Image (cartoon, rainbow, N blue to C red; front, side, top):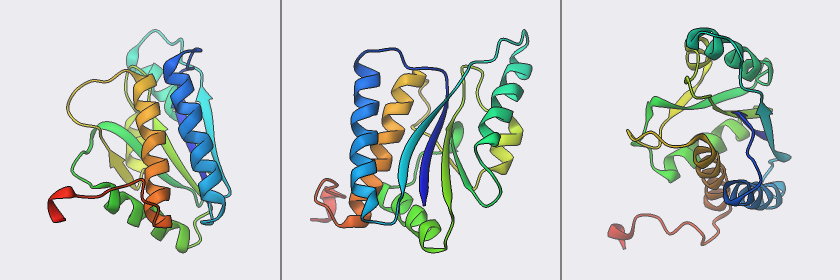
Length: 166
């Protein structure tokens, strides 16, 4: 399974970009032994349309262009679920991999959010909570969760789990 983070906007050089690169490289290296062929990032240009709905629609079409037939689309959206544990997310992703799904596209919308067409096409909508976060930080968090997912699937000690259960 190929992992692809499709994010609207470009990260400029700096700490967010450095962290994103670090987690992407870690995920790519660990994922090879787990049946994940790649961990890539597709930076989608921000739309220049005048109206917010038009911007979201243009950006959504670009995201969907990366989610060909058979791809799993998961989105980070303010209306997504914030209550899923990392273990639950890892189980879902591992299940898609084991079912022979070829690509998992993790989509991060632009400043105007995700178009409804993208949300409707997704198989999983996630959120990092009710607070509004900068898109660069969301990309870092999404890539960290990809890496964390792979460590859970590998039985690696990076993820400590719920400390209350110990």
